[in-house]
Image 1 (cartoon, rainbow, N blue to C red):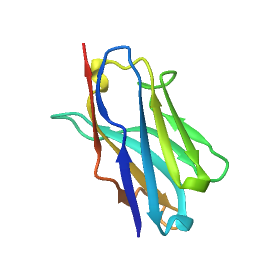
Image 2: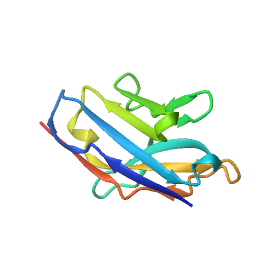
Image 3: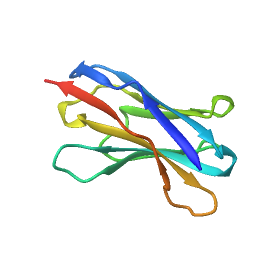
Length: 119
């Protein structure tokens, strides 16, 4: 089992920045990658970004490329999402998720953190 705790959400004006953190604990040695997802009211959850623990390979949704940056601190078992040039359409609950090596799917999820961007 892997436990994930997100933090860093809040209210920000359009054009502003926020940094989300996701602290992992438990069987973190079994993790292959971490991802950030978001879900806006009335919409399905969507992929935002991902990063592998080993090598730091990253992947981004087209909607956030050039504005968001995912990074990780292996020593702290923590993944970050730096969000710049925020837009009202970025408003959502943001979740981090863990992808174990053995399954290749995002099996563990945090409780989510609210990000609200005002226009």
